[in-house]
Length: 123
Image (cartoon, rainbow, N blue to C red; front, side):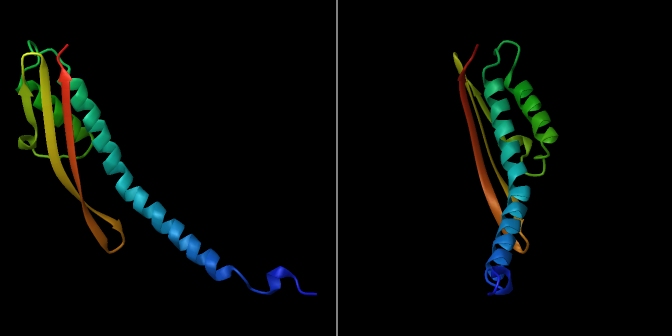
């Protein structure tokens, strides 16, 4: 009577699944921080869009957004001119578009395109 471990079955599929899992982990490790930084920037844009217009002019809002960009290490991808701030009588709209090139797997590069918009009533 042979034991199952003596047949050698399933070893190749286990190695393949381990390689797939390692590749997935590598991709998440490189792509995840960019998406997290983008969501954080979008949240800050919504917060700044609600700021009162009498003490938060458009230039001050862009300054604060650029500070957030530097903190999130997105400054190589987002220049100051990428932010479009438009203040209306009762609302404010902020938009930004940028591209981030990432090597998501060894030897495989991709450019991720992000577009964030915030249109909020002014408090």
